View (cartoon, rainbow, N blue to C red):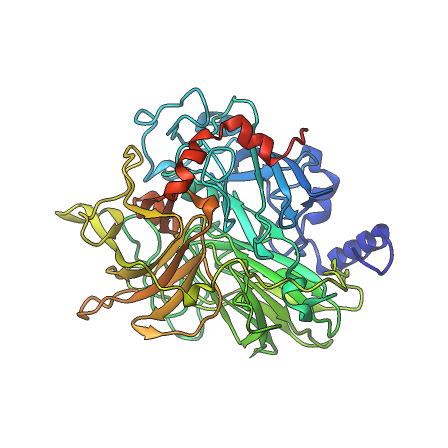
Length: 613
C-alpha cells in the first residue's frame, strides 16, 4: 500500500479533494451511510475515481463470498451487482498462478414485481426484450443439471482463464444458479502457467447476459506477477479502471450543439439502440461509467482521476461494456499523450518470450467489449488540463452510435492519494519450455466461420434481428440452448486456423472461452503480433465488395484442462443473446479417455485442495 502516511491521512486527503471538487460526488455520503443505501445504488456523476475493494489470496488460497442482487432505480433502470461480505460492490479478485480459488455465489435476485414494490419505480418492458420466455426454460433441481434459463438465473464466467469448462469451474452451458438456492461454490486452481494480467468475471446466462452486464454485473480478476513478465513495471503505482455501459439516463435529451451544425437525426435499429451516425457525435446508444461513476449524455460531466505531478503509473483498463466500443486516449492541453501498452487481454505482449521488456507506444487504444489493455501512463506536470476520453468508433451503418466523449478529468495535485504499487523487486518470469510457440505450430486444418444477421420476419426489415455465427458448410441458424450437438469438434492437442468473416453491416467482436488465440492476418494482410488475445474486432462489410472483411486466427487446443464443451460468440452481448454463438467440443486424446472416466467428482475436488470456509 501507500508508503506515504497512514490510511487515516489518505482518507482525509480524499475528503479534502471531494470538498474542493464540489457536491457532484456523493462518495463521502455513500461511505457514511452505506448500511442505509439500497443495494446497487451508484455514485453521482463527477465523483473521484477510486479503486474497487480487493479480495486477495492468502497462503495460495483465495476465499470469497459474493451475493448477487438487483435494484430498480427511480428512472426504471435495473441494476445488478456483486456484494462482498463487507458490502463492497464488484470486488477485485487478486490471485497468483497456482492459487486455489474458492468463491461462493449467493443468488438473491428479485423479480420485477418485487423490485417495483421496493423502489417505487415502474419496471420498463425493455428489461425483458429479446430473452427466452420463462415457460420455455424452467428451473431444475441441481445447478449443474442443465438449462434453468430464467430472467433470475445466473452463473459466472471467468473471462480469459484457462480452466476446465465444467460445473463448479467455468461452465456456462449447464450451470444455472437460481434464487432461493444455497450458495453455489466455484472451486478451481489458477493454472501455474496462467499469464499475469487483467481478467474479469461476469454472468453468462444465454438470453439474459446483456441485461445483467448492462446493469453493472461485472468485476475484475487480476493474476499477479506482471512485473515479473516486464521488469520495467517494477514499483509503479497501479490503477484499475472498469468502463461499463448502461441505458441512457437522459434518453429524451438532445445533443449539445456545436456552432451552427444541427444535431444528427436519431435513428434506431430493430432492437431500439441508436444507430451509428457516422459523424463522431450525436446521441450515444448507451451511457458510460468509470468505476461505476456515470458520465451521462448530453453534458458528459467527467469523473475525476487524481494523480501526483509527473508520476508514472501503471493503468489496467477493462471494457466491461455490454455493447459499447472504446477508443481510449489521454489528452493534455488537447494533445494526445503516448500510452505504453504492455499487455492485451491479460497476456503480456512479450508472451512469445523473445521480446524481453516490450512496450508498444500508441496514441490511442481500441478496445472492443470485453477487451483489456494494461499500459504505462507517463505522468503529467502541474497546471496541465488533461482528460481521459474515448474517441468515436465507426461501428458500421447498422452498428450502435459510439461518439467521442470524456470519461474523466485528470487532476494533477500534490495531495492526490498515492495508489498501491507493484512490487519493487521480483524474480523474472521464467520462459515456458513446455510447448512450442503457437506461431511455429503447423495447424491440422483451417475452418471458416462467419457472422450474419437476418430480420426475424423477412417481410418486415424492422422486426427484431436474428444474429448468427455459422461454421461454413453448416446451415446458418441462431444458437439453440436446447441442442446438445456441438457446432465444432476438435481433439485436445490440435492447433487450427480459423478465418472469421463478417457478412454484416456492423462491427462484431469474436471471443472464445477457455483459450487465447494468435491473430495471423487482418483482411488478408499478414500481421506481426507475437502475443495472444481472447477477443478481436472483425470489420463490417460495405455491402458491395465481393470479399468479406475477415481475420485469420490460430486457435490453440493443446492444453489438457480445456477438454469439454464450451462456447464462442460475438461479445456484443445483445448479439450473443440474440443467437450469435456456437459450441465447441474438445475431445480428450485417446490415452486420456479411460483415465478421465475414472476420475470421480469427489476425487476431482480433493485434487483441488481441502480448504473450506
